[in-house]
Length: 130
Image (cartoon, rainbow, N blue to C red; front, side, top):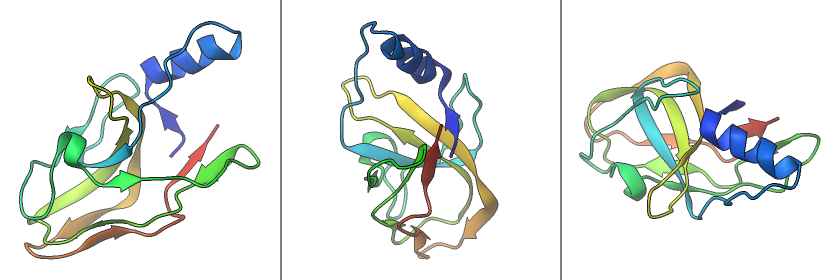
């Protein structure tokens, strides 16, 4: 995922020249999207159902330290008992009182689940790069 939300990107640019910046609030959640967003608009999140809870209840994700301009997840993102759906993208959000979208990106290929399936993004498979 090398797609930064535009508002978050602007904040990082401001921080890079010493201006104030509000760091993301952890935990970071990985929201599953049925429609892919853009730099300036959120995608459509999978509605709560089966084992998936939308919004701040989405699965949490953590990352290893950055190296060479990128970093990778160090935990699998797993949702059991999925509803029947097709996941097209993921978005990473912080957990502030008004959650902020940080990163977004389409899956390499859409993933269709049947009711009761398990959806997993393997540890190391979510990568962030600048």
